[in-house]
Length: 299
Image (cartoon, rainbow, N blue to C red):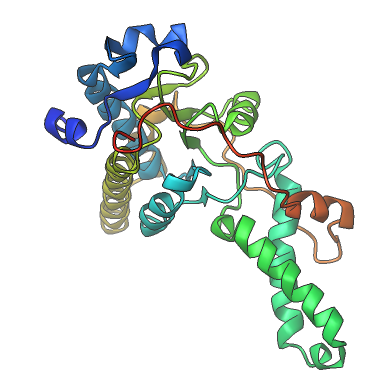
């Protein structure tokens, strides 16, 4: 049975693409028709792609690996933060720090910096600092929390990325491709599906569309985590050999990155350089995007 119904997708506006003149020709296989100058996405293909992506994410969650969700556009932030945190997966909703994946050890140092600041605040030496120093450190801690707070528990590279709007998150896409990390993405008619491992043709601008599809993916992850919990409980009872414990991972051999090694913990004496930390915390406002193609009532 499909995880979503045609009417659900229709009601959520998943079928609305961008203006015809904005389209990417590579999306032609997923376009049903053009109406009033706007491309309409083929929802029958969307249903199939949603099921494929959900099944793959379920297997990844079942294997014990993490899936990172990336959604920095305004209408997706709160939806992703709420639904993804419920299944205990990492997510990025503020800004994609350059090198999040390709320079992961530095990101881990920045995360560890938060713990160092927390210990400093609890220590008696905190009272000896001036008000200015306290303010600077507190601001630094707040910025780190804003940008990296949602990936505190991510001790290794994620097994996959789920991206809302692959065109906007092109830096994240490039980093994942460089490291051969599978990419799941909501791809609108103005985006290029090439290089995306699991393409979900859908409206990536409407909050209802994002809410529906992210909800389905999170439900699939929740099912995978439940299956993993049941398997581990049964394995503990039956005391099966190690070889049988790995049986459930065969289905995701082509999806999950082979290297499952945890990133080495950062040495307490190894401090992150100020330049590196500034690069991560650089919170310059990004130029406003061009106005959406569709009318407000449609998007």
